[in-house]
Image (tube, rainbow, N blue to C red; front, side, top):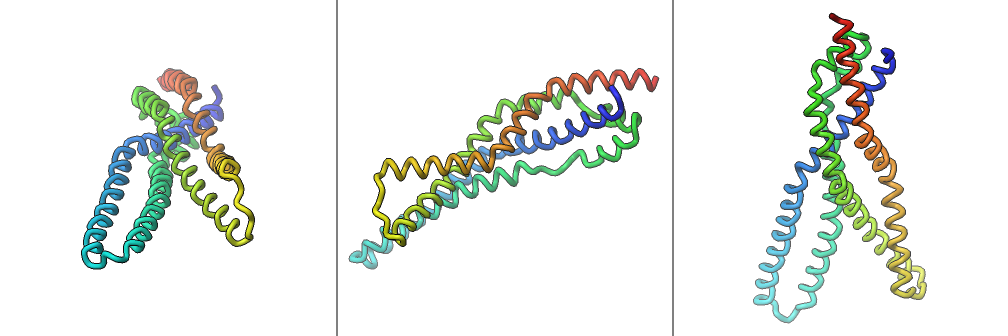
Length: 225
């Protein structure tokens, strides 16, 4: 293996490890994110119930106001929860770069490459890769569902106001649902397709790369000795 090939493979490993660390960070945080979501829902509706009880005692004749408040709270939660989930996953998947010194070491040649390889715990790397692979379906499903649900609400909102302002006759429910769902799926995949494909390529092509780097490490050790 030439020096240039070794450099390219190490940089590919670096990029993959950064992404894998991000995926595992999200997987570690998903239970907390779920609990926070449930807590927010519980607190909001708990406050609404207490407010409703007080309001019914103070002004029992204006029940329509309570219905309006409940509807607004529900809409706000329907928007805020998927938006928060998607943005949290995006933020958590961007972890600090622990390998920022690799480019400098790689440029030193054999000594720098050997220094990087000597610090790698291949067993730990394989564990992190396997964990990211095992949890990737959950990671991408939660992320895509959050984005798709948010886009679905936006599409429904836009379609409703187009119908209202332009005075179009309301189309059949099945047609509206089909149009909205198709638009939602299309936009969701358009936004996330490249990331999804790149993740799959990285996660399921690293086995061969790890084997090559193990072999390179032993080869360079032989040269050094």
